[in-house]
Image (cartoon, rainbow, N blue to C red; front, side, top):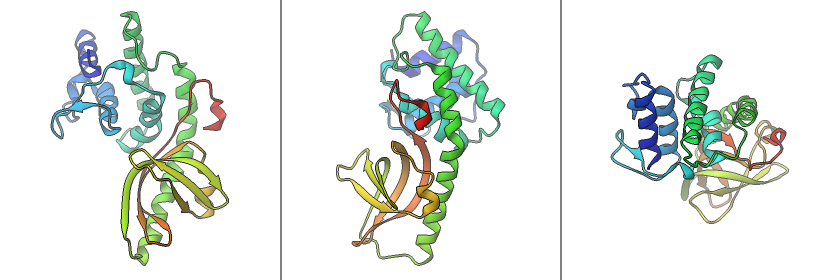
Length: 227
């Protein structure tokens, strides 16, 4: 059974209030937001824009999906208060507990949900500030737009930090990219950060043309302080 179908069953059995303003609003606000984040991340789905549903099963869930949801997605989707965020995350936790009670395996079963969310919430301010500075960098670049010969739009993983350079590996592009960035960004960026960027190649160097979500990636058992 797909994640969408399981979420819908949960929403119906628990009589969750629909959120008609959201895509997949029949899942209730919290699960609809999580479902839409999974769509945005590229999880297997079907349907047209505004009416898409996740077709992947619950075993497809990864810690990076939770990180993107907590750190990157919620602050960019009008979820601004701590109380509202906590309510949404509690609803997601309740859904995962429901899956476990039904002996349905899911990809987040091996993590300590509370500790992981606490660590991700702690990383949120850093990532939001980093996103803000990256956005400022795009403004600086576009003040005197360079000649661009190629652009790449991707979510890039920070694989190396060397002085004022970061090395990036895109999810959909094989070749790594090296970008030079100002100190205020270098002071905030961490290894294994995911940066949603549009990069431009000037033939001499890569520059940041657009910046979006920033969220950390970590593995089960990793020291939470590193994010």
